[in-house]
Length: 197
Image (tube, rainbow, N blue to C red; front, top):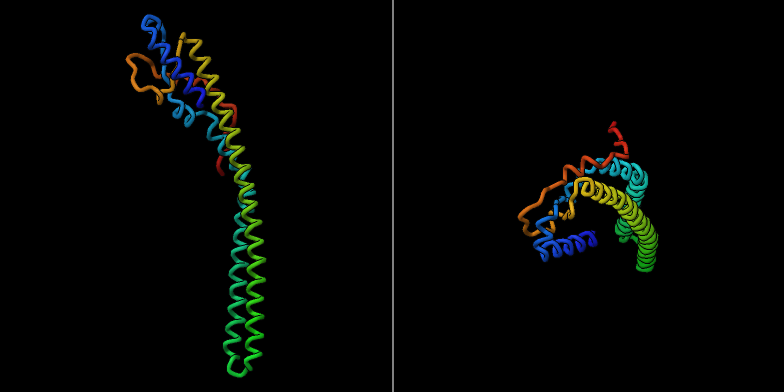
């Protein structure tokens, strides 16, 4: 995308530097963001990615809920032991109270350590999932952008345009034609949108 902006800026500079050449050149504009958002395959690709990653996302969500439930259960377990100690404290010796407090602290530390390990494993799985998801999205976005570039090039050549500039990078233009919709019509839909049930 940065290369397109650089090439666009260079092309614009050359066209402006040579007034004579610019007068004979055909210049068009394209709103790349609009074309991308309305690409015929964009929704199908989004649906495909959702279907691809939904099972893993659901599994991670279930695992997160399981960890949350374990945290609540561990907390209740420690609180129950502490409540029992508090209830029995009046009839226990200081040594017995200290022993039970140590047991409760040891239990709390043990539960906390095992829960920390589970949370770290979960965080690692989530990070791997996000990285894989982002990689696949970038791959699919690249394919869509390639098809837009190809369609733009083919349309410009077929209609005699010397330059096609991104409408968002042009500050001012006297002449030019927005060919966004025309380019969009030339992009064939290669993916089928999954029907929602």
